[in-house]
Length: 467
Image 1: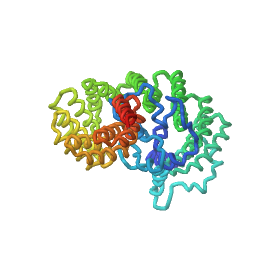
Image 2 (image 1 turned 90 degrees about the vertical axis):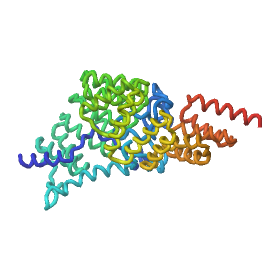
Image 3 (image 1 turned 180 degrees about the vertical axis):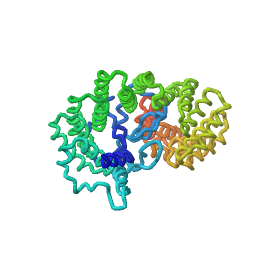
Image 4 (image 1 turned 135 degrees about the vertical axis):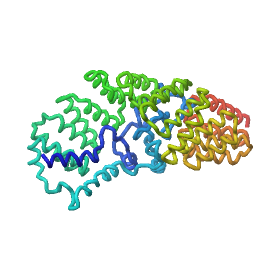
């Protein structure tokens, strides 16, 4: 009993819920051998953001991330990075909106968690795995379950954990759903997705559990099959009506597919079941803000504040909502609080960037120029700040400086259409028609429905025709 208690205590120290861990590192993204369709049908892929324009917001209204997806206002693992085309792009792409450092490999993260075993006692690890007789432990189900969780989470020895799970499944005559789920988890960690899918499906036949639905959906997302994952969640909702985690899972997938209208419907369903769900409240607040309803958005962010969330991004959002809702007395106070609570340079940059927008809104271009420069001092990979600073430089008549800033912005985020369009406009004004046409084509590729870009391309074609 004492042995089980110590094993469980050590496991709890480093326990990570596998359902929430979905960060892919550079190694996983670039060396992934699971083939996906190069030209998937619209609305069926998470890897290629350009194919998901079903019900998504316009980039003119809502800014996008480096992966080409709309900014949601809520930080989650793995949502900021798409599938990079080149190694250079993968290295440059941050793992989340929170940090600009890419993950070298997600397996490295688990290895670092596993090193906690060295600290358990001065004489070495608590359990010497190489000396364990797994067959003997597999015949004692209570001991085996505690031992499996210790090996999987604390020691991070997936192969040994897989052997123990296989022996225990055999001992239970393949009727214990718990062991089948653990086998699936091991296969998923080893990136053997089809084997993991078989185990989770078999577990669902034995015993339908919410966690098993979530694990199986995670496998389908890893295989880039979001529609299958959504159908699976809906099957789960038939068995467990109103289950928040399943509703939230559907909303997350629709959000990743840029289908924000369907995502908003499911987030509202989540709030009907659980009115303290921060992720759903923030998403709906952001949705109202970009739908030009800052007063309604302000109510949602105040609700998050009342629930005890007290951080820089929240006050940043509150400051913007107050400004656009014309509550000017609270605007600067919120941004001052956001700056004082900022934990890293990226958060400081976001606050200064938003202050630059407010300076533009009140007509103080000098203050806006200083704010955008301060944003770039804090984060020199802030493409939007480069773009806005270029526009201000152009107003001052500094054409070459503006062009250099726009080229930097477009190289940082190729999916952003504004730098391409602005560069095309400037080039057109100074008579550099060839560069203007190339940049306009890039802008049209990033945002095909942008009318100003289409007009500029038509105008340039007429110029070329007369030549």
